[in-house]
Each structure stands twice: as C-alpha cells, then as structure tokens.
Image (cartoon, rainbow, N blue to C red; front, side):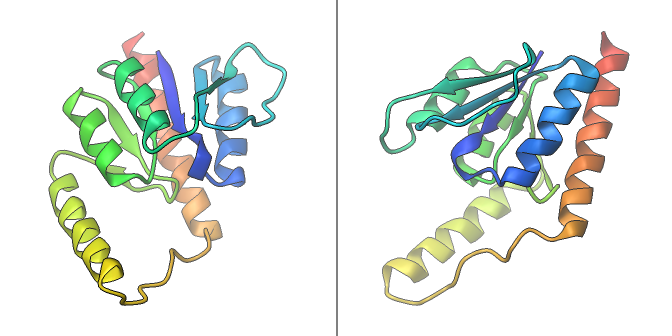
Length: 151
C-alpha cells in the first residue's frame, strides 16, 4: 500500500506530516515530482522524479496508483482520475475529495479557469492555516487507521 503525493505543489508542512506518519506506521510514501526534492533517509519515503512537462507527474500517479491507496493532491482533474480508479484523495488542506463532491469541484475549477482566461484576476489560494494542517493530519490518521485494520 502506497501514499502517492503530487509533490510539486504540496506544501512543506504537509510533506513533513507525511514523513513522520511513514516512519511511525511503516507505510510507503512516494513523492512524485518533476524536480529533485530532499527526502528523509528512511526506506518508507522515496522520490519518483519524472521529466518536466504538463501533467507528467499527474500521469505517472494515475498510471501507478491502485485501488484503495491514498493520493495527496489539490489538483482537481488528477483527483477525479484517481477517484475513478478507487483511490482515496486528500487535499493538502485536509479535504476528502470523493465521487460525491469531485464533479462540483471540477465545475468550479473550470469556471475559475474561464474567468482567468478572460482576464479576471481571481487571486491564488490563501496560505495554509494551522487548522488546515491539523485537519490534514486528522484525515491522514483516519485513513491510516482504516488501512491498518484492513491489513
């Protein structure tokens, strides 16, 4: 069982939470990124570096992930694809993305993309808050507890 991380956009505090969880629970965490990142010296965390290019890391995650695994991403199209494969998706802000909410999130994303392409300044996401980091850690712990019960 692997936790796949869309690592290029994953905030450092979230990666640190994942690294600690990997060491504590001995679950494999694989960061997928198109550039080198330093990872802790443990056999439970590794970096899969892919070539640069649009959606190359996303495509690699979709190709490698298996049903029941966890994918950490805030990329809505990637989340949609891995949900279809039976994966659990958790955003860096601690939100579970599911079959029930992903289509509305895709619609919002597409609408915002249309606004941006027409010149409207939509701004970026707010900085990651302490409560969002805590929610991520709580959701991760819930998934890890379910994973350990299943094994």
